[in-house]
Length: 301
Image 1 (cartoon, helix red, strand yellow):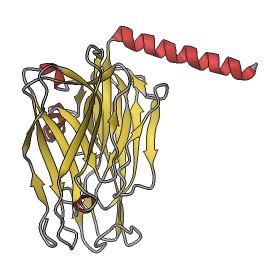
Image 2 (cartoon, rainbow, N blue to C red):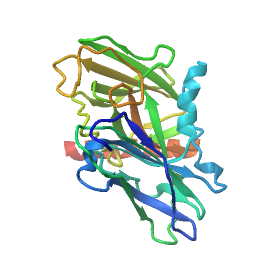
Image 3 (cartoon, rainbow, N blue to C red):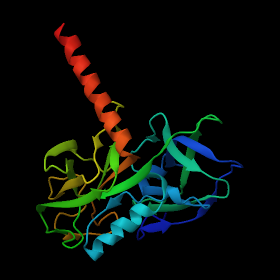
Image 4 (cartoon, rainbow, N blue to C red):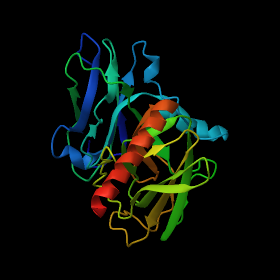
């Protein structure tokens, strides 16, 4: 990337060197060198499938607005992993993962931006497989839960704060494995809330001091991973700071709208999810309640 340049999206293809189906336990993407961390905004490893329709997510919907179909289409495109500045890895809980088949490829989407000095770097990926013979019972799907209503889009006037929100319906009983907020330079805070079918609400995660240089991936402990029934609405609230008080803000006098460039803004929560049958959901909820009751009893003794 030259010292001065418009943002660039690099989209090559990579072969996956396997000769038999393999289940993935963990994935890590990172820049090829330390300098690359300055210029690589994100690097997404999409999967080009080889006759594997179950790898396509069909468990979410963003609503009847035709513009919302953009989010649905993105979430149906199979992803092995998304990396953004400061992220570590995706670790799938035991008995779950992503299936790779021979002949499949990685379709990269690497976004870079100029930083005032020439930097040469790319992305590399590490994949940890389950031992041969171990086959997880559940697939993990990576979903970008939107924090923006595309009918209203995003409007951040100069020297001001703004709040946006987005809603996504879960069509299946769901376990949420992690939470990774994604903004650009004006991101300030994000909250993910579950609106349950009975109308009650549960705050799942909240980050109040977002740092563009550290897009941390918060992986829930097994007993803490949210479990919600089908029909739940995931409500993402996002706050944006376009003032001089935001040390990452390149120009508080500039109007900011939605866009893919680093100087534009967006908001979504990357979360890996698992889908459960009704019986599996009931069993897991009962198991959680039993553990909670036992822990409470032990504390009282």
